[in-house]
Amino acid sequence: TAAPVFATGDAFLLPETATGYHITSNEIEGLAFEAGHFTAFNDYNSTNRDSEVRPSYGSGNPGGAISFAGTSYSINDNLSMMVYAAHYDETWNQYFANINHVIALGDKQSLTLDGNVYRTHDAGEGRQGEIGNTTYSIKASYTYAVHTFSLAHQHVHGDTPFDYIGWDSIWLANSNQFSDFNAPNEKSASLAYKLDLADMLVPGLSIEAKYTRGDNIDGTHADPTGGYAGYYGANGKHWERDFDIKYVVQSGPAKDLSMRLRQATHRGNADQADGAIDEIRFMVEFPYNFL
Image 1 (cartoon, one colour):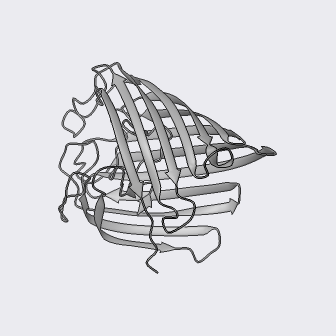
Image 2 (cartoon, helix red, strand yellow; image 1 turned 30 degrees about the vertical axis):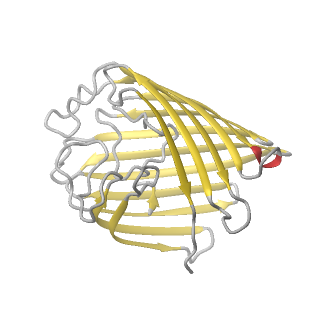
């Protein structure tokens, strides 16, 4: 599954997997529905098949299972929207909404506006403590021929970080290779540039660079008995620089095989939780249709 409230990721050495059921429906043109219920989750650093369903950030007792449902609707080729809801047993209820609008500006020009918002609050026993978190991001992308320039703003309203299950379960504009810029009360902004070389040099080749800076982090008011206590200080700030090269084979037996080289540099002060890192990842994906 790749839902915005529950997803399995494959950007690490081992792909994440989950145990449960997942249903989808696309019977009505432009309208899609999906739902799922999962009782076990294997993280990227585990080969077990019965691991607990744990949050990505909270250190409290994990909930027993997660259930979700959602729908997406394409009003036309340029405007779409999405809503989802999830229940993580004895931990939280989470809601998500997205709207995406592409505005044609002329020959080879367009402006894409994308907005995402999550609302999370504690439920049942509250195994991660008290949660009252609203997090949103707004992204504007201008495309001219092979060039795309993007500007994004992201804001976390709440004394706990925006948390989720599965490393691809976050559809926020400033969720990057290393940091999600999702700390308590954090405000962040990013600037990105993408060059698609399909019409210039090598079809299937693209290059992207991104810089993100976040500040205003304050996690000192988190529930002292919850799973987020002590993670963040009162004046956290950090930045990340990302560079991405991707190539997709266009034809032949290996058509759609993709190779991606990603490099990230992250730095921050002691009041943010992500530390400092220089990281390089190389990923290969080959989609295969069994039917």
